[in-house]
View 1 (cartoon, one colour):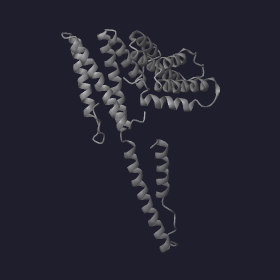
View 2 (cartoon, each protein chain N blue to C red):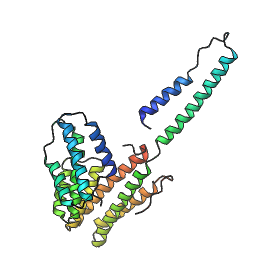
View 3 (cartoon, rainbow over the protein chains, first blue to last red):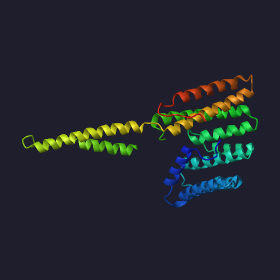
View 4 (cartoon, helix red, strand yellow):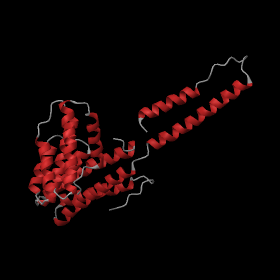
Length: 160
Length: 118
């Protein structure tokens, strides 16, 4: 499983970053999130996964300014939690991965790439912990969301 | 193509296709030739617009293939678990359903997209 953001997630985040570039605390938080992802990317390229995780952990631990739109807040934080869960799985820390995936899913579920990615990661964390039935349920939920996204991609050219 | 560009192109086509009010008694051969050329241009634009509309609906093959691969990867994961838990009817049923989703997704890949199984 890749720990980089899924392409659609990256596009959604890019749009959120672009839309937020108007100044104010909300914009600064979005800028901060973009910078944290860039820094984590650089650290991962350099092989420092622990520091990359700390940078992302710092991002999700900060208070979110009130002016950030709810869907932007959810997208940015869920994407960060998904990366954190993926990194924890790579470190063979399924309990930590489970906590990150749970924290991401607690922000709300939707028929989107963030929910699908987090359900997949939670399933992997469950599976790595020997909780096969829970893992299968998460994989199935992720698959149902992915199938719905495929339907959208086929019906509207994937513009969503 | 974005809806806004599609609408702009549509406006351009409509504008080009609008008949010009040339008084019949004052129309010259040059006017008629110009009107004919305008009609031809309107037809060309309409054809181009139709082509763009079709192109707009073409699926993003990379996205489609990525989703199909995800769906089938999740199916493999569910069936691996089911394989480890022989005799668990619930997991076996989930594996069968997940496999159906994978096959159904592969079948839905448009002919223009060639998804390579990883």
